[in-house]
Image (cartoon, rainbow, N blue to C red; front, top):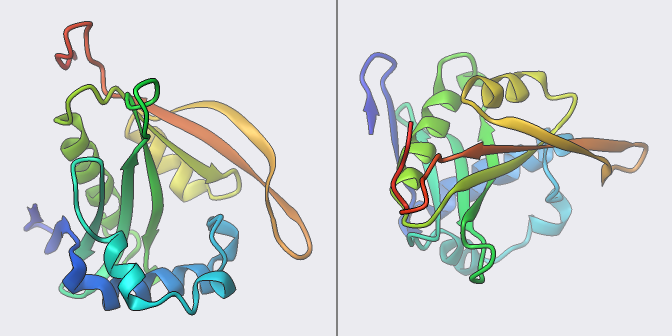
Length: 182
């Protein structure tokens, strides 16, 4: 997907994107530790082979990247395993580099993810979590139709404080026959 108005290219990342993806992911964990459940120190030494595996695309898991022309944003998706929970998918790792914010990159990433997941058979709902103090992210998700369904107190523990996370979901609006509805 290309947004020619803002010169943003959104595409699924592949194993060939492992190094720029990991550099951006580690930057996110280092610069904004309060935004992610993952910890920079725990992930800093992950072998590139493991990173490449994470980028192996399937219908049930993928990572999208935003390029302007360099990689400036990412968002991941995975479908929950098991028959009783495959109707739900999780969004993880949403991050846009500070120099690319307020340019529509985050919205473009989320719209591309929603569009792609809307065509996955039997997937009915997308879920995500967001730290309650991250107003820009919360506003984006709300503007895209995500609804809050609770807050997990003390979801993340930093060295000097706890952070609450808001739980959000977006219905992909399917009827009983698996067809998308409006």
